[in-house]
Amino acid sequence: MIKILPISAFVLGLVLVGITSGFTSGKQTSYTFEYVPPSSNDYSQAEVENLANWEYTTSTVNCGGSNRACSITAPASLVNTSGDEPELKSEINLETKEASNEAYIISVETGATFANQN
Image (cartoon, rainbow, N blue to C red; front, side):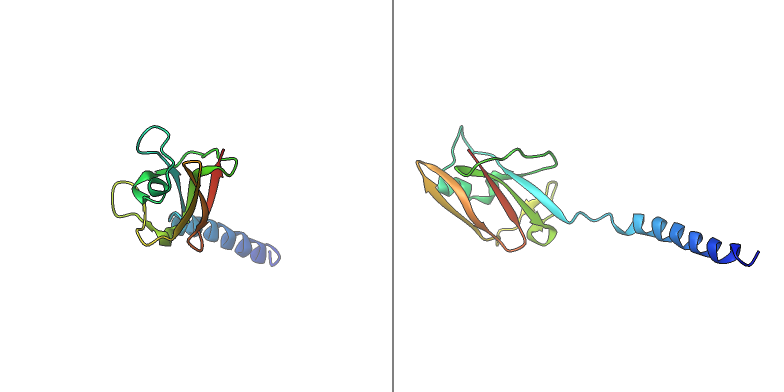
């Protein structure tokens, strides 16, 4: 009987930790945004740097390459979640370069990551 009591207490503790952690981990910590050109194939530097052209997505964004902007994944601290859809905050630092009328990301705010595509 004495050996069962410590084991039972340990198991009960694990169950309680599992139950309570399920209730406290519901906040999203990062958000992915995909560049959506305002008009057909417009990857100009001005449009890529316009945060209104970055749309939140829950889908996997398939980026691969380096020639033009594709996606940004930002921590919750850089995202405005007060509206219908999450949006990148206006103060996010986004640096791009343009080559052959297509802009690509070279740097983004600390804590965020980016991907370009071909």
